[in-house]
Image (cartoon, rainbow, N blue to C red; front, side, top):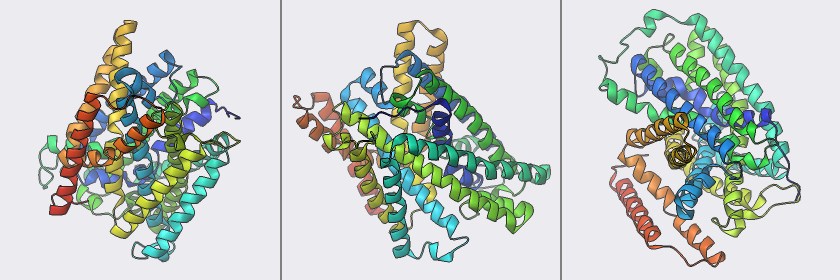
Length: 464
């Protein structure tokens, strides 16, 4: 098998390209639905600190444990055992392809601005187009990971251009009086400052899912030291961009108007600033951006499941590769799952925000487990500074679980529960002794919570 190697810039582009997807273009409205200007700034401050700590955790583990391939799976497995490692990988894998579906719904929304046939009511046509997108991605990634990451590098550069244009033009149009309108949301129904800050957390989390992109591809890196550098470089750059998008938008339209905008909200903010040409610029940029994000997430989803299957924790079907070293087995299963959920989402009219929130909560477990494992390794190395960073990253991850709310937690359990069957199949294929007592207990808890999620949907307590 020809294992193709990836350099620093391609790794950094994977980090940036995975993070800067549809979330960036929907930030103004998504944040305004939960909070006003002051709490939004507090939310970004918390997120910035937490994500920088997580980036440093991934950098530390990439440098101190270079032998661990696949990153988030291997860290969880080494720290907490094979079953926990499996669930970390399963949650991340599901998060990746649900995120792909979210981005597909948003890109169709953007294209409908130019071609009305892509409007949400034309479901049969959208289902056909989703097949074109999903299986086009299959063909591209199966052509080789290195070639796919090169395309991702090009689309990452292309997507940043309209975003930087947005920041420049909205910065010129920024009105401090508009920004200062009810800064703390006291005249709204948004709730207390604490509730508003908490309400921004799932939005900011999804905006940064993808930070681990270089870590997932660590086994294909030319130099392992590039993995940590690419992670931190990508995170800092994207954080600055996100804060500018959110803050400057509040100087163009009030919180109430931002919250009522159609998706993608960035387009309509720029339209308010400079006229219809602004929306056109952002819609084109969004289509380019999501093309790169769709590719990036397809690579990450197939790569993590392939690496876990190679280690024997996912069924063997995920481990098949072609002559170019592309993980075609994992890729095929990933695209089938993506297609099924895309069909369900298109016919149930699920919004981008709902799908991205589910994807974000599914990614929380891998982040938390990586941070907890970093605490252990930092103590063994007697690295006090990294120990502090790891504790902060762990606290941030736990805070995100709390901020997401009980219903999103049980929805996550509904996503994790089917993984029990995949894990049992892998155990049988590897001729291992089967699940331990604690694994059975953990599995039963997941099944019960999944049952609660189903019940909540049936009685209307959970409305997606």
